[in-house]
Length: 456
Image (cartoon, rainbow, N blue to C red):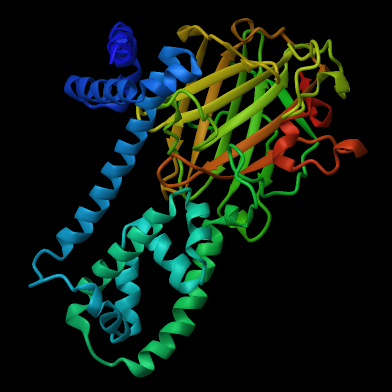
C-alpha cells in the first residue's frame, strides 16, 4: 500500500505533462482530465509491474495514456458505425435475432442482398466480404485488419443482425436467386477485395506495411526552380520532371504516385500526386510515434555530397544487429511528410541518421506544407518547401549527385494502419549482398539507394 501511495505522488507531479500529451486526443478540457485520471488510476493499479521493471515513470504512464486514447478512438468509431446502421432500422418493428439471420439472408434476392451489403459501414462490409465471399478464416481477417479476432467475430455478428433487419421486408424468392447470388457477388466482390487489400498477401506486418511494387526508378532529376513555389497543394506551376511509381497490377489502378523535386538557393521543394482509396487519413501526430501507420511520403536524402554515390557499406543500418561502434551516417536525413487528419494540417518529421535516429527540430517559419484532396476522393496532391539550413543540409551545386530513396505509404480508412507502400529510386546495379532483402527494408541500407541529380 505504501508503494502505491508513493507512486501516486510521483505520478501526480507529472499531471501537467500528461495533460499536454492528452490534448491532441481530446475535444475538451473535461475529456483531457478524464483521460489523464484514467491513465493515472491504471498506472497506480499496476504499480507492482513498474516497480519490477524500474523504467522511466513518465514514459510508462504516457504509454498507458496513449493506449487508452487509441482504445477510446476505436470504440467511438465502432459505436458511431453501429448506431448509424441501427438508426436506419429504427422504424422496423423489431431487429431480427440470430436464430433468424440465416433464413432472412438466404431468402432475399440478389439485388436486395447486394444493396444491403453496400449499405454496411466500411469496416463491417470488409469483414463480411472477406469471410463469406472470399472464405477467409477469422484469424487471417484479424491479421489483415489489424484487429483482435474477438473484434472480427463481433463485427460479423453485428453485420448479420443489421443485414437481417434490412432484409426483413424483402423475404421471398429464395432458391434461384441464391444460386445467382453466389456467382455474381463472389466474382464482383472478390475483385473489390483484392483491389482494396493488397497487404493481405504479406507474411509479416512491418511498420508501414509490405511493399507492392517493382522498382523502376533509379535516378531522379531535381530541377532548379525558376521562381519561388507557392505552397498551396496546386501543382500547376511545377516544371520539374516527374517520376512515376505504382504498385504491381492489379493494385496499380488504385495505388500510385507521381513525385517531383525542385530547388533554389534557399529551399528544397517537394511535390507529388498520390492515388489511394483512403487519402489524407494519417492520425500519427496524435500518438507521437508510429509515423508510418497512416499515409505518408518519405524522402531520404544525403545532406551533402561528401559521402559520394553509391554510398559505402559503412553507412548501412542493419536491423536487429547489436551496435558495433560508430556508424558514419550522420549525413543521411529522412523527411517524413504527411497530412494529419486530427488537426487538419500538413505535418513534417525530420530525422538524422539511420541508426539511433535523432529528430531535427525545424522552426515553424522554416518550412511550409499543403495538401489538397482529389475531387473524386481517391487521392491527394501535396507540396512542401523546406529551408536547406534548417534541415542541416548544404546547398547543392548544379550537376551534384546525392543518394536518395523514397517510400510512399498507404493508410487504411481509419488512419491507424499502414496497408502497404511503394519503394522507389533504388540502385539499378543492386549489390548481390542486398538482393534478398525485402524491398521495404532497403531504405535502411543506404548503399542500395538511387541518385538525386541536381540540375540548373
